[in-house]
Each structure stands twice: as structure tokens, then as C-alpha cells.
Amino acid sequence: MGIKLIYSFILLGTSAALAPGRSGPLRHLCVQKGNTPLSAPLYSYSSTIVQPRQQIAQPNMIKRQPGQANANHGWLAMASYWTIGAVVSVAFGYTPSSWNPIASPFTRLHAFSMATTLGLAKLFFDNATNFDRPKSWKSTLASFIMAAFNGTIETILMLVSYDLGAVWLNSIISGTTAAAPVAAALTAKAATLGLLTHFCYAGLIHVFFWLPKALPAHRRPGSKPFHVRGLPEVCFLSLTWLAMYVFTKDIAFVCVLHFLFNFYGAMVMGLQLPSF
Image 1 (cartoon, one colour):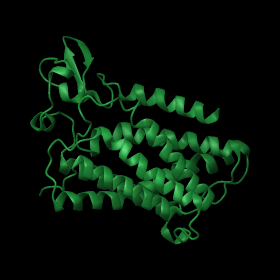
Image 2: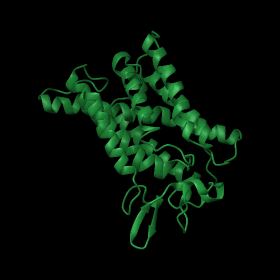
Image 3: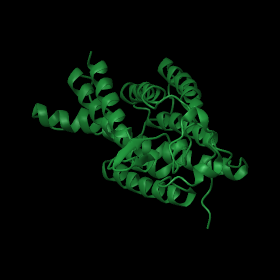
């Protein structure tokens, strides 16, 4: 029941945040007619409103979308995010020196998490396309760099967001001393608070940062809405990775899983290196 309530909260919050509006985080996807903003999919943003089935998205249309991150702006945003994440990981003691040896031992949970990550990556990015951005060794290198940094640093931030609720917030509510900042004790209250803070962070960072600021346009025209194809996969993947964290303390393996997910996604959307 607790998981269903948390998912319902995420679904409602993300759906509302993703709705283009005059002041929303994705307001650049809003087409105005007079004084009334009208929601429009990315690929139908133009001076006139065209029905999705009557228009085929062209790469030059995508490049003209206002508010969409180009390669340079996207990389600058990601570098800033990773810098903040590195500072947080050091300040709160989530450095590699505190990690357990990777996959030692290799458990059934490791195998399940690996299979889940690979399977959901394919399902999640079925809605993505590269819009004819060139595929070359440069795009492969860009994907690798992004996946390596994000797979490590954002993983730490996601785990910190869980411990924020499971450890620190739980200790405040319970009136006890906070435990070590690596995987709180397994109690129903601690896990619920941890999931709440984690999903709040994960939802906000995708809505306000990754989609409008960091990533290039990649949603395939006519694809299912994010809360239908995307959000359920991300939620289940997060639960799988958090289970790895809580039950095995194997942060390094979670970083590897996140790297694989990011690398596959960046390759599908054709991430490009910054131009100087």
C-alpha cells in the first residue's frame, strides 16, 4: 500500500509538472493563441497549430525549438550538476573509500538488478530517437563520458536523497541520533521516508533539469506520454537499485548499472560532444 501511495504521488506531481504552461518548467513547449496558452507537443511547435498526425518532425524543426539545450549548453549544465554532486559526495562521506568491494559476493540480487537494468533500458528508450544527429566515434565518446560521470555522481546523489529520508529525517522524527550515511536500518518507517525523499528528488531533477536543460530533444513524435512510458520504468529501476544499496551496500555495482543505462540512452538519442 505504501509503494502504491508513493507512486500515485509521483505520478500526479510529475504529470502536473510536465504540463506545458505559462510559468511551468517546460513552458517553452507552450504555444499561445491570443492570451490563452495551449499545450503542444515538441514536434508541433510552430506559428500555427498542426495536428500531430498531419506533421512529420524534421531535424531542422527540432534544432529550432526554443529552450532546448544545444550540445554546449547541455554539457555546461551537466558539468555544473556533476561538480555539485562531487562536493556533496565528499562532504557527506560517500567517497569510494567507503564502498564495499564490487559484486563480492555476486548474489541473486546482483543478477536480478543487472537483468532488470538491461531490459528496462531497452523499454524506456523505445520512445527516444536521435533526430538524425550523426553517429560516429565522437557520439560514442560523448555517450561514454556522460555515462561515466553521471553513472557515478548522480548515483551518489540518488543514494543521498534516499538516506536523507531513511536516515536523517527518520532520526529527527524518532528523536534518535542519525546512523552512518550508508543504507539505513530496514524499518517500514525508514524505508517509506527514504523512498519519499528519493522519488521527490528524482522527479524534480528530471522535470526541472534533465528534460529542459541538459538533454537534447529526443522524444519520438507520437510517443506515449512520459507518465505512461518512462515514469513506471524509472520508478521500478530506482527501487531495484535502492534494494541493491540497502541489502548489499554495493554502491560500485549500482554505479555500473547506472552507467550501462545512461550509455545506452545517450547512444540512442545521439548525444554529441560540445563544439568549441
